[in-house]
Length: 630
Ligand code: WT7
Image (tube, protein in one colour):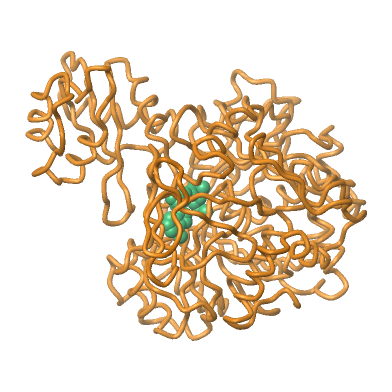
């Protein structure tokens, strides 16, 4: 516990040390973990390559730092509390000892199916404890997991399976979400039509009928039968891959962000304990899905490395009603609650009545993640959920950063609505202008970069190191570029302003405009399309698509629905455009570049000043687009 920050001066002191002597700082933090062999060197780095190594040549297994390290002292403590979708179904509490045995048993089963160190395993599962067991079992035997959010379509799943060359898929028969029962295995079957995956393991959740392919598909409960519930963890190098997680960017298909074992382990536990000020015995709940990085770092790895009790929730915020989150908080006496602004805004729309019946006095800390939290939502959260008593930690970070980068330390850093406030120890931020010049001093606004490595950072993008270099390390030389705009105010506090690239953030989910355009263009009648984000009351940003299409004999309504279905099929329902406007042309410059600035303005409804349109090939289309605005 000596790594815990307790006071504001303590934070500044630690921050200072982490910048002046980073290797000494991180070596001290890393010392509290169990390493089979200590590192030769704390850090080797070069942001040109990029080539980053933390805890060089150290050997370890991350699961030994969750289980072996905790079993004697915390064996009977709840590791995971599972709350099912249906409040009338009984939940499950799984202790560290039970989880250890489950992970060992399942990892033995994976080995028996021929899965070994270095193999890639896709996890396409709903929010059941077995999803965490699956991740940890992979880590236990040195297989690399890649969790794919179970809301993605079969073609999005197939892309990921093929990109990482997965050997196995771990999945379920179906999935409960609100009042819906959704097929999961059927999506896997479709994705695997043209693939060489030779092992599929299916966890039975809904009991619905599925087709099992002889020789390839196995039931979870059958493969673990007779397997030992202990084993020895595989010896891994600190820089071996722990997982791949696919995320969207401004160009091309989603890329596989790679995290390695040692640094990710140290960073997620350190950031978890400090940001949330987690104390032993507290009950912590993060409402994310394990398909996203938040679920990886702050449902599974960070909390379990810290010996915490982590709630895993299968359902949705509004089922059976808009009081569900608060019912769960009361039921388990939740101390730290971590959710996304989009969920807060959705619940805000239901008013405060759904909160009234519940006792929220156990809450100590509230967290926010995924997108900028607007001041109104911040105040609602603070007043009605935190009863003005709980500090809010607005945590800024990314899939690529592995863990929280800019955030208040709960109860210690004075907060300001909509501000992520200050960087965690070890995080060296800088703001650069569009020419790459570093902007010093306060009251400045520009592009957010990070100019020194931190242990949780990505190491590469799977199978394409050049893409990693181009995307993150080439825009501004010698720096990691986040893609976000930021303001540093007169107090030196950071406020994230949102993406400055062609990425939109829909309900905290990252979407590349190019990716959505490509999906729209798959519709046979679509000639061209352009996608932009626009402010959306609940989602933060909505998706607005301009489409040039040969209508044939369809009505506009039919065509719009068909296009939405196409996007759902190719990516998943989360990428479905909120608005589609059929146009006869797009505003292009003489060199053929779409002027997105204009499309964004129209989508957000600021119609009076279109800026300079003199370089447009055909200024007429702007008038048409404005007139047909959705
Ligand atoms: C992008 C990363 C990291 C977990 C969830 C999203 C935006 C994230 C905040 C915040 C303002 C935020 C950024 C970032 N973002 N948290 N607290 N305030 N913006 O992970 O899918 O990798 O997306 O989400 O734009 O770049 P992700």
